[in-house]
Image (cartoon, rainbow, N blue to C red):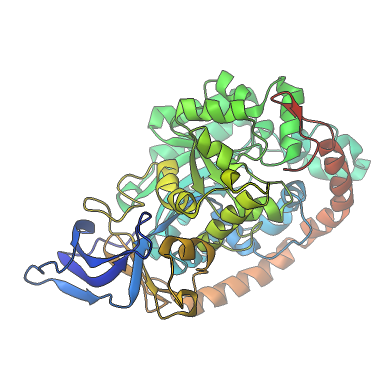
Length: 502
């Protein structure tokens, strides 16, 4: 990450967003060594202070992405009518054959988009096949550091392949396809655990506010011993753990049939759920699951755009909040939700809470959505002193142009941040007191060079992965038929039947 701004900086005459204020609060922000030192009207500028005129601008804390995948940057725009299971089947095609430089490049694409769109930190579940590597994770971390963004970076791992995880799917394939998918088996679990341990032992990015974590990808893709091994490793190194839990109904049905209980209940029985655990998506969780997560101090990462894009259903945000669960917001990967726009993530989260029924008492408020995208996500990432504009907090600040069309007229600050802003009004982004974006331009990367490198990589990877694309074309009709059939089975939770997609 870029070094904190040296000495003092005074942001003069900004409109400061505040959840409890209809139109924000006019005032100044004094920053010292990357931290907010003081806030208020007409602050005195210490000698040598660099003064930034923020008149005509709204400032808000940097948005925090609670769930994304840096490896998805180069896979953007590859699929249309894809379920989660089709996306997983397409993995070797859209993510295969990458060099070390590609692993950095794909993360740069995502990080650049996030900061340009007002996001200053992200929880990135990063995938390498068949096992994570020190060099690969260093390449992803270096991408965040060079862009100037905070991150929690977790190798995403499993010990079962997709075709081993879904009962009966491999058997439904023709014999020649069975042989092909057998080549996609994961590396031995103990080897993967050892690889993660080496990454954690060698981690050198914490001074950049880029922290490591562990991400067993999906419970049904992992043996119990593997999940427990990941948890033991995370606790040994004092890092967090993140997994996709109840994202699709297929996962929920398979989990209930395999474990005889919900996925959350099973993970808790293994001793895995605590204040350092984040469950992504959490669509197919029941009230007891929410209560358990709240009791353990765990977090949920709500990815409304991806949930709709992949047809997985609607997360019950109102109910999760009412039962006391910490909820952060995420975009998910660019290969499945297409962009990394946290303003869109807020808007989608608000809309999804409303389409689940006509009673406004069951909807999330814009203040709750805004809180989830800042404070809730910060807690999920385990980042302290972020997500709030207040003395003692890091100066991660987004400057929004109030003369932009999204703010004409300006009636209600937080409501318009959630329902109107689409990132086109973002003028500057500061992280740790240093401008990363100024006048709409990313200062830390050459975007023209990034575009050229991305196009060259796309062209090369298309050729390298042509065989995998051909395999996916043959697998697609089988997966597209088999998995929805599995999901059609009734799924009983809390003594009611969930036959419909939420």
